[in-house]
Image 1 (tube, helix red, strand yellow):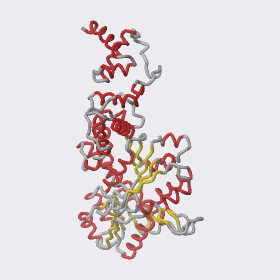
Image 2 (cartoon, rainbow, N blue to C red; image 1 turned 45 degrees about the vertical axis):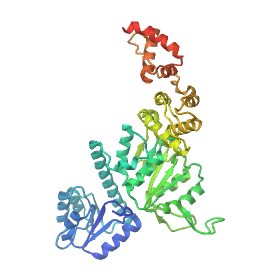
Image 3 (tube, one colour; image 1 turned 90 degrees about the horizontal axis):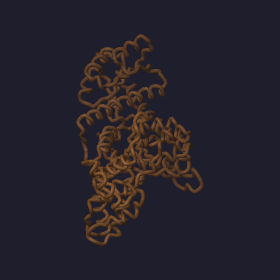
Image 4 (cartoon, rainbow, N blue to C red; image 1 turned 30 degrees about the vertical axis):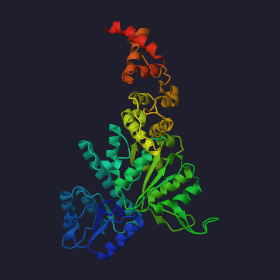
Length: 470
C-alpha cells in the first residue's frame, strides 16, 4: 500500500449523488488531509467493496434508491463489525439519529452541519479505528511473543526482554499517523529506535532528523516550516522547511523537552491541525509527515512544573515508549562488549583482541550514567591504548575508578523491621560478603572492589564464614 495515503485503511463514501461525493472528497482531502478515499454512488455495490478493499470507515447516506442507508447499516455492522460507520444524512431528525446509533453507527451528522464539526467527527472515528487496530496487533504480538521483522532492530544490540517488549510495541504502532514519544536517558539509543520505527512504517518519504535543543523561536519556525522570499532580512529566496522535506516520511524531533513555550505552541498547531505556515506566508500548507519526538527529560514532571504545555504533552503521549537504561539490562553488557571490541578494532585497523571474562563482570558493577554511548566510548578508549594480544582491564579500571562501588546508602534505602531484632555486625558482614560475591559471579577481586576492601581482607572474612556455614 502507498504509505502516503491517510489513513492506512480506506474511507468509503456512499451517496447516490455523484456531485456530493466529489465535493465531500475534496473537503476531506483539503481540510482533513484524508486521501485514502473510495467513492460509491450505487448502494448495491457497498458490500462487495467492503469485501474487496481494506475499508475501516464508511460515511453513509440514509436516503438512497435500491438499498437505503437504514438497510445497509445493520448489514455492515453485522458482517464487518470492525468497520466504523458514520451517517451523513439530509434528515435532521432526532429519532433517526437515535435509531442509527442503536444499530451501531459511530456518529450521525446532518449534511448542512458546519464543515469543521464534520471533519473533526471523521478524524475522531479514524483515530479510534487506528487505536483499535494497534491494540489488536499489539495483543497478538504479546501473545505470540514474536517479532514480524526482527531484521529492522539489528542495529540495536540486545537480548533484554524489556527491549523485546519495546520492539513489539513499536511494530504495532509504526504504521500509525499519530505522534510517537520516545523517552530514555542520554545514550540509550533513541535515534536508533526512531530509525527502526520509520523503517517499519514503510513510508515512501525520508526520515528527517533535527535536534531542537537550543533553537530559538524564529530559528525553530524557519527550520521546520521554511520561509517565503522576503520574509525577513536576508531571505532572498524561498526555502522549504523540514516538514516539507519529510513529506510522505517521518520527521524526528530530538530533545523535545528543551523546546521553548512559544515553539511548543507552533508544534501543537502542527499536530492538531496537520498544517503550518511558512514564515512570510498567509497560506497554510498541509503536513504529510509522521512526527516522532524524543527526550531524556521527564515530560510529565516538566508539564506539572509549568515548563511544558499540558495539551502538547497529552497530544504527544498517544504512543509512547520508554527505553530502559543499561544498568537495568545488564544482560546486554557481554553482547555490547563483544560488539564494540569488534567495531573499535575495525575502525582502528587492529586485530580484535581477546579480553578476560572478568571484564564483563567488572562493567556490570558500573552504573553507566551515559548508557550504551558511554560503554562504546570506554571500549574505544581501551582499544586505542591496547598493545598486546589480550585487552587489559587496567584502562577500564582507571576510567571507572570508584564508580563501581555502590552508592552511599541512607536510612531511606536501608531499613529494618521494627518487629524483628537487629542483625549483629557479624551477621551483616556475612550478608554483605555473600551479596558481593553473588553480584561478582564469585570473582573475589571484583567482590572486594564492590565492598571497598582489599582482596586479602575479603579472603580473611570468607575464612571466618566457613566454620559457621559448615
